[in-house]
Amino acid sequence: LLCSRKSPTLKGAFHNQRAMALRKLITAENRGDYFRRIIKEYEQAEHYFKVAHNTIFRAEVKNNVGNVLRQMRRFKDALQYLIEARRLAALIKDKAVVAQIDDTRAQLLIDQGRLNEAEAVARSAARRLRKSGHQVLLADTLINHGIALARLGRKEQARFTFQEAVEVAHE
Picture 1 (cartoon, rainbow, N blue to C red):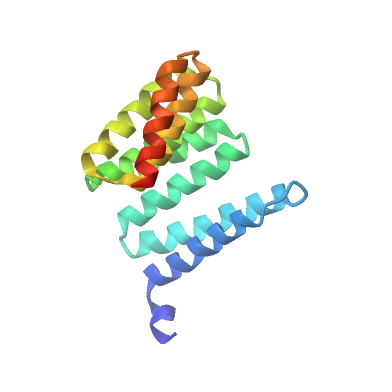
Picture 2 (picture 1 turned 90 degrees about the vertical axis):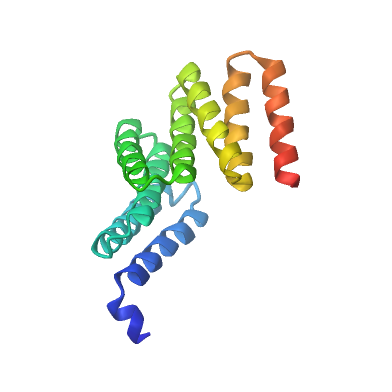
């Protein structure tokens, strides 16, 4: 406990976990209030990670905020967070986190109906994740890639991509 009072990384982790827990509690009735609280917790986490000079955690938190803003349909704001998250992850050359952020960006593009861009971003993210061996992240990215393909009417490619997602998840 004494250590947690002094460690900005632990404080950041606390706020990050709190935000993730709040995300699990969202219902239709409390959606607006919870989204605001979640963003506030993520902002606190990002502050402490910045103090701790923990760039990768900052990138992941910004990705999470971008995802929450996407869920709120605040697409322009979400994109700004995702751009900053990607910049931070690229700065420390973490290809898996860059791919994860690109997957969130693909979801944003799907939500905006920008399906060709979403498909390209998701395909690129999946390619990077295959190379890096991050199977858990790859399965989710393949699902989003399949969604973009299906909505573009490329049903056979979508079916193949969904099947690959299932196989990767089973591994």
